[in-house]
Length: 258
Length: 235
Ligand SMILES: Nc1ncnc2c1ncn2[C@@H]1O[C@H](COP(=O)(O)OP(=O)(O)O)[C@@H](O)[C@H]1O
Ligand SMILES: [Mg+2]
Image 1 (cartoon, protein in one colour):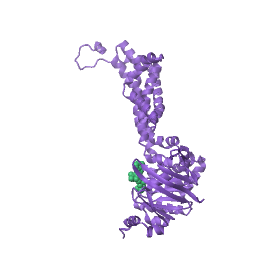
Image 2: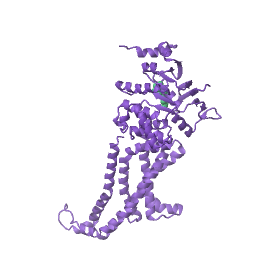
Image 3: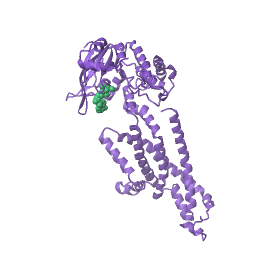
Image 4: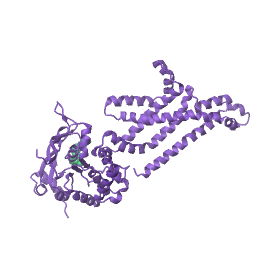
């Protein structure tokens, strides 16, 4: 395994009851890669992302962060995860949700400080300074003392991005970060994510914004019924996909053009 | 009714002449008894808020061997009269275990456990009403279960639970009067004693109602203030 692989999953399966949602995913994420994940609704994109920081327990398969396997093998072939190990992993793999999920009883600043103080044990003053820096980075320095209820969807999502960034994660996961935003607010959030890509941070982004995926990503995956159907540079996957299904999926986005 | 003795003749609708003077002359008896009423209230409320949290968490535990006994406890105490619970602790406990609790301790214990059962259900409902997205956001930051509860879930849940807790606390304040059954000399016991000695039930219990009101109402006002403060903070 090459050294710059930061996150790897091998033969990842996930079932909900009888419903097998992920059917054996193998994926190596190299440091600095920006991967856009495409796929129809229900194809398992969110589930894949949530298995990468073990918000969902994989039913089968192993996860490796910086080459170290997460969990310990049980005699019956399954994997046992310890709570402390998972918490440590999640602190290193950040996540931005479709619904923002800001803590409503905390100001923007407190939201961005929370993980730093209670998980990373940073001093309050240090956490505050870093939080202000990250809020400035997402263009919200002036909203530090605002509660989430007072912020627009776009602003809330930018605070959520600052909250994830403040943990200084090795990998940042975005699950359709603009899908619950009014169209005129999508741009400001995508702008922040684009700016981040210049910092060289490793990111995985589930999105339906094909144009953004094309410019943002170094690599595009197409997920279909719980398997990776296509994996390549944006140029290739988006403009000359190998698979018929990928083509049909992409055609739906270009069916109506002005 | 004893008051009939001092309402001779007149027509049926007329009120007896009220003799509050007699009651006020002995008001210190009633006010002293407030101390025990307040003590019972404070003990049971503190136990309910503290023990209820643990019991509420046990109710939503994944493990059945934790959740089921907690549920059995809650259902037992919620679905039987508090009066009967008190009688168990005072009269039945010594028979079963050989431990005879003093009347006050038996009353405090029964009211506390009863409050725990009710508060557990308030905590359970409040915690379960916190959107799963909040748990997930905390977990995604790497927060452990306890820290998540303390920093995120409980602060959010408690905001919604304030009205329910207020309701329970007010109910509990009045329920302390059952302690009079096992001869705890709290407000209701003293009032019953006094009224039976002076044949002034109407006056005595009216004054007692006012005393309960004066004890309980500031608490209600405080809880309204708390609600307003939470509402102002946006969450
Ligand atoms: N917690 C869950 N319980 C049961 N089924 C689930 C759960 N989460 C997702 N699923 C199912 O898994 C499938 C894939 O869901 P998801 O990963 O959210 O797809 P996508 O994000 O690509 O739209 C869907 O059929 C969905 O109903
Ligand atoms: Mg999804």
